[in-house]
Image (cartoon, rainbow, N blue to C red; front, top):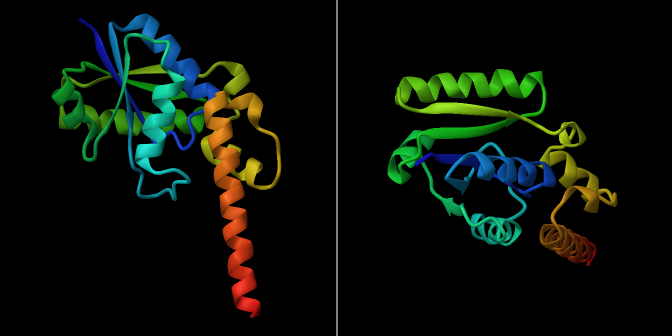
Length: 173
């Protein structure tokens, strides 16, 4: 049985991510999508919210599960019996970064095999950070997000704007 792990912060999950998940689910018997924390990023959604969002987005893929954990990716691979680590590449910068991570994972566990998927050209320019930035500035990014996640993002951004207005009002009093 071929089991793969696709880790990421998925804050938010984009249609580019979803495309990779669909392609991975067609190649592997089981694909575990791991929603991870990334200390270098300030997430818009909690891990629990992201897990629920991703579960809803992949509900039609019977061989895909959504999990979360902290710690080393290779430890999670061993815990779930995954032989493959699935990663997406949008550009040369992604390749350099992912190549180094793959080498470190191989050092930590010589059985960890990283499989790279090239992003579909229509998604190569996307990143979750760029989409959040664009949406926060009022841009319509709905064409790049699953419907459930677009609604959650719009709601979260409205809540943040309301909080900012409340804070500004408090400061002026």
